[in-house]
Length: 141
Length: 158
Image (tube, rainbow over all chains, first blue to last red; front, side, top):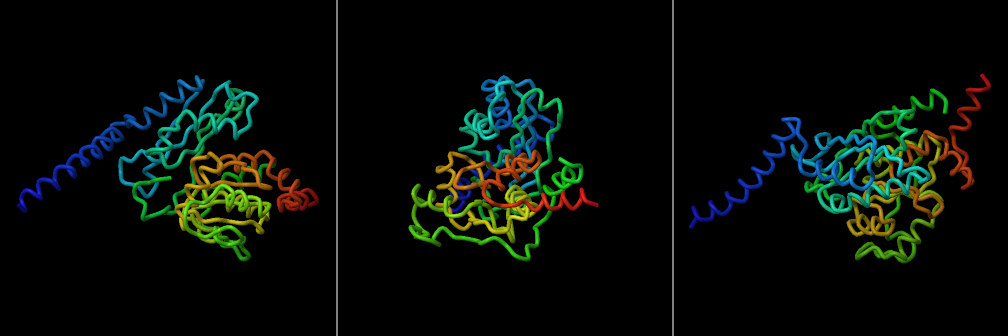
């Protein structure tokens, strides 16, 4: 019975380790993980950006290695012309509603028109993590 | 904006926890009418919270001890402008508030900044407003004179 229990415990842990390891592998191989890929695809579809710079910043936060929970994105699109910053950010949120309701805990956004980006073509650096909600390791927003 | 302001903007994102000698009022959801501190944060109650003070922020942590770099950036920006009289709500202490304020503003993340009862945005937008001078103007509309105006005046007169 004990060995049976051990098997039941081991299998889910092994599977979750596999998922975690594959994310870590992708990251170390310089490839983007599934969440990053989804963010990129959705923003490209929704906003047809001239420039899209996306950075997974999860490694700088209190989350397990290989996480895809904290991102910074610079989106340059003529669709932002005439829109306030709030409206631009809401467009980005709308495109990524599923990710924001799911794994993505933090999203830093730079939403620029092409002219604005030419003035300052830089993906900023996010502030250092200050620990967050340490007991909430799932990284729920 | 002047070069020194630009440098200050770049630096403030990397400031650690600020030491506030005279801090803003840390509120809990239960302070004031209509708050029980438990159960879902009703829309009406959140509405009263954001309208009760001219400057209202929802943070992870407190102004004295922020627990998130983005929340800290909001605190530091307000500090640069000399805004010390604002209401700060720590969402880490109240899960219902944490979710409720996101539903209220239809905004998925914390921090959240409200000026004169109106949602302004998060850390990115506040930083942008700080860098392009809009924040000074918005504070002026609220009858708050930004400390940066005095700093600039001092600089100009030297």
